[in-house]
Amino acid sequence: MAEQILSIRRKKFSFDTDYGYLNARIRGMRSFLLPHEIYERLLNAKNADEIIKFLSESPYRHEMQLALTKYKGVRAAEHALCLNFVRQCRKILTITNGKPRKLIAALLGIWDAFNLKTVLRGKHCKAEWYTINDNLLPAGELDNVTLEELSKQQQLKGVIDLLSLWGYEIGRKLEKVYEEYSKTNNLRILENEVNKYFLEDAYKSIIKDKDLNSKIVSNAFSIYIDYINFINAIRLYNAGVDPDKAIDFYINCGGRITKTLFYDLASSGNIEDLITKAKDTYFADAIQKRMPLFERLGEISAFERAFEGIMIKRLCSIYRRYPLTIAIVINYIWLKYNEIVNLRVLLRLKDFGIPAKIIEEELILV
Image (cartoon, rainbow, N blue to C red):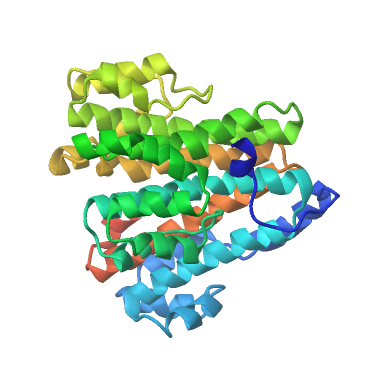
């Protein structure tokens, strides 16, 4: 199973990529990331069309040309951003071999988990396949063709059956819990299985190796899983789930959100109690800042971008401690992902005529 998580369909090579060479290549790719001052310019754009024009003249111009052959306006721009992110991730895989490639493929499995949960959530909500597809980032082993076929299944069960038919172990794991899902209509049961497979199992496999780069990647998984655990604990609290059942959704990764803390957060008596229990976590300040928005919306989504920003900054900071290691890849992937999300936020909110001051609060600069 672990080999299945860490592998990606590819030719096998007999040597490992030199980290000095990888460092030089990634530095070159980082030079195309947008500088912070560009966001001020885009915040002052009159509308989404001005941002689309900027993207058509930026490092995204190739993907914009492709996207505009299929879509128009904001949808075309968002599709171009997705294409660019996927292309950069694939490029990293093409310049690495051996152990470094296995570690990077494992990291990209984070997007396999994200994409599969998005497909399952879409089918659960009876969304159209193209709506589901517009929210995917196929940077992992599950490529665009595979995900599109899954999205086109008529029923959620069809997604699971197709995964099993294609030989994906996650399909068999989802089959085992599908009956419980069908009885309760609780999507978290399926999402939890996806998380444990792509995140917890990958982490446990990587942490067995004691070399520095494996330790760095396992640390990155811990940081990401801390974020998932924290979000899930608050969601479970908000949904009023029995804490004794909520604990089943905990992902074990040796991170700072321990099983005990997860239980305590999920069992909070009220929002003030939850804030008190979260005061020693990285996410405490974000809860305080976003509380007014949460009180207006009543949705956990009020916190999610702020929590994600904290997670991204923690992941990117690994590079400062280990600059000549695989940490530069972690740094680049998450900087690139954050850039994509920032641009999506700008496009969508500008399209709705949201004031620049409000949009700025949703941008994360790392």
